Image 1 (tube, rainbow, N blue to C red):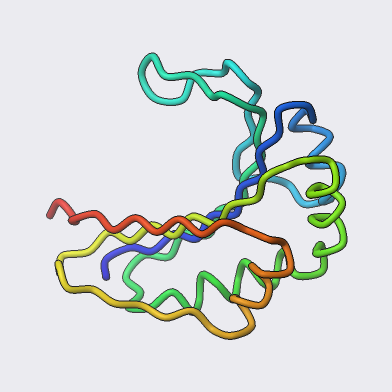
Image 2: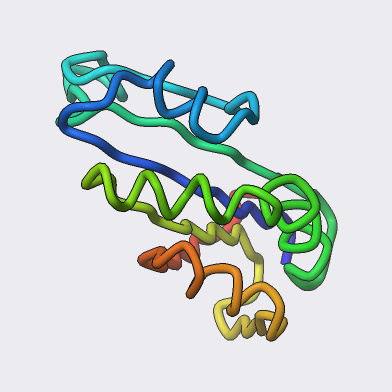
Length: 130
């Protein structure tokens, strides 16, 4: 693996990104409002907040997942309140790799955390352009 990213995202049709941030009391890596431009002409379809950990030159995701846990595991009750406010929570795992046959594993602690916050898991593996 050349690069691994673990991103926790919160999406809402009704809550402003600043309100999401106030629930979690953690500064986001990014936040956006419905209609803000993403890439090119595409626009976000809902408000959002994201927290991203990126590690280069790692061969597993343990370090990135551990950093997410260190930063967000104490916020599980806040994530649960966001779920009650009809937010959607997603964990995106992005891997850029030179190897087409890459595998990875997630620790039981990280899987438990994702379960507690009811996160949908999205995994994307891309070839690394050397």
